[in-house]
Length: 383
Ligand SMILES: Cc1cc2nc3c(=O)[nH]c(=O)nc-3n(C[C@H](O)[C@H](O)[C@H](O)COP(=O)(O)OP(=O)(O)OC[C@H]3O[C@@H](n4cnc5c(N)ncnc54)[C@H](O)[C@@H]3O)c2cc1C
Image 1: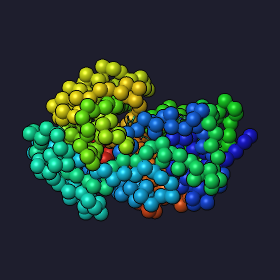
Image 2: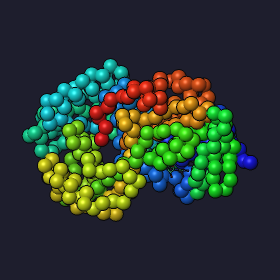
Image 3: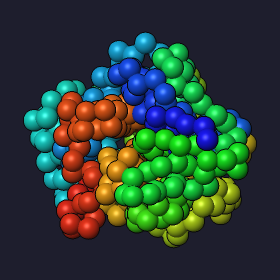
Image 4: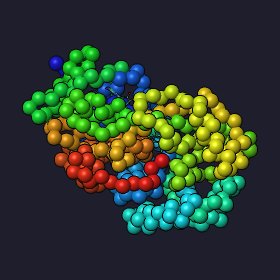
């Protein structure tokens, strides 16, 4: 039987980052198994590319701080562009929430983040209708990265340091014996291993179940509309998010007129569907028309509109680390933040596997045990 020390199931941005960080630490026999004939066909290739430290929970803020720093200083070009994230509030309650978050973010070391009033919101986004806006928060170091460039950098770096990747290789089973992982099953036969990292995104729960683990990760379709504004977009337009509804928009990379907008459709039910539903156009323009003429006076670029899967957990936080099956590790459930948190995730998993726990950052609150213990986290700022 073939073998590898560590098998990573899934060659998206998370699997590639775990492989990269393991090999940076000297692990040699690392094998990524990806079922598609090309990387990036899962959620990574559908992501908007936003990155932010404006979160509510300490763990999300710290994961972002680590990851932003990583992307700024990385040897590969991640496409990091600090265009900023503007959250705006339309009620006093929402505004207080943003205000409290900014306090916490600053205490944890986030720089360039501030509370802004309605007038400042209007200055950041000229042309936006602000009458109903109470205020907001702006993070200058938040912004954009290029998901596929990040995936490529992690993969190249991992392979250069000794990892291997096999495409078109679907893992059918995780084989456990005596409380330990033994091998994975593929159509080309079993591959023995000492450790497995499950990085199969929205599709992870089924494989975990086969190994006897209830992994609470659920797929949920998210759609992005790509449109071309008839007028030039405001210069230096950041990511703009209505904290109340989750409606958000951002400029497309290197474009003065093209933009992406989206919102979490509350009628969407968990499924693996990635078919773009054109009924979404009407829903999103309904929201856009109240917000800015440059949004609603736009034409849809249909071929660039897309639908992908969020991999949601009950508390919208990732699941990182091992479980009661020796050698089985999870890096799943990013609930919309997997690209931005991929550096922190890869480092955490590499330290958990090689050292027993993550030393650069305590990620124990993200363990799978939190669900059985009832220690769920609370984050409102998910979109
Ligand atoms: C519309 C949209 C917008 C988003 N915007 C952002 C954003 O702005 N910022 C951000 O940080 N995140 C964003 N996300 C979330 C982000 O895309 C994900 O969290 C991230 O890509 C997860 O990476 P992953 O590697 O875990 O999963 P994936 O990229 O889905 O990779 C998993 C891989 O596993 C493979 N696989 C599955 N099962 C098997 C198997 N049995 N055997 C072998 N291979 C298998 C799949 O083919 C896939 O390639 C967005 C997501 C969507 C859908």
